[in-house]
Length: 548
Image (cartoon, rainbow, N blue to C red):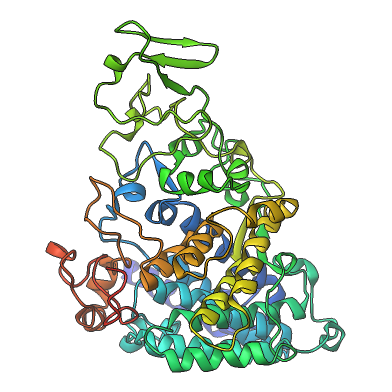
């Protein structure tokens, strides 16, 4: 009885406590130091969306996708970068995390009638969903971001087709451009310049970004839906007042790296990565270095470091000679044998996917995981810094936009003069890298002076996408240009076309991911992967014969 009484006393106490204080229970999940989603000002969330999206974009374009398109190669821990050994588990979680944050910005902006923030959120939604469908293919879109509702269909959403996603992106960008069409003063005090990490609260520049992204995605679908692409591009070009675009390097959509800590510093910096490992492992690719050398491209000196110790093979030297004199390593022919080496005295790149030990390339005297090779070109030392005037996420550039319009003009669409657009693209890229004064000399170079071919145009666009290599990959997939070849020990004998759907998605959203996988087209390079292969074709390139 004594024990029972104590239990009843406890129960009664809890009941009375609940009875008289239950009105306060709703506050238990409220963070007194935080801001609630239901009341948050969108200006507080917008910087996170902008900064994290920019970092995601650069981490692709400066890291493994730069390896795919052979801007760079690595000489340690390189299998994903050089050989496309991705393990079938590339996650889109970070992209959807930012889409959720961005959706909060949009919903709160609608509730507060903040049109500038609505427009920005629609642009960012388009950019993020554009990356997802470009990288993977079909994906959750119209039913995405609704997991809080709790139903099975919300937690495991259906996949929309690429065709539907691109159409939605273009519609959102059209709406965004309208929302962003007013002068800044018309938005009242709602714009906080410091919250806008790209354009410091300038709606006219955001409008240009929205229209320029339309050009990007219209060209993206041009092989599958040429009539839609043609009409959309011609409409934008014919109405420059209604559809201003990023046509000057000063208008590029960029985000500078702050460099206060490892999370907001340039990815290869040695300020916070004290060992310098990430910087040391990245080397220039010979695929990029050679054509830039052939045209005396001034950007090469900005992006790459000269070899520390050039090689020189001298047939007059006694057999067995291997010595360094005045900063040059001299080798007798017998020391070289049949080993291919690059004796360029200035810049030497790593060939793509050359071997299982690329750190031994070009007679590296200290091969292995140290990545110290004085006979190949590291990146320029600006890439060891945490921040700097050239260390930016480059999301959309005037170079890209002008090259898109040059390609459209080559197709015979009403997009201006192809030569003029091409030259504007080259000039915009040089200007963005502080080399505007080099334009007149460079554009006159053989191989750079306009010859009317798509191969030349796409080659210059590929070079201009340095640190933003995702666009070069998507262009290659669409056109087969430049004519990149996989290296001798790459996982397949061709460049990959997409990311694998991740294992969690296959397990937790099995029905919908399975439907998307069935729509992929296997190729000879899909091999044991089956349909969910990096070498299977998305809708975007099915039936186009591209890129291989």
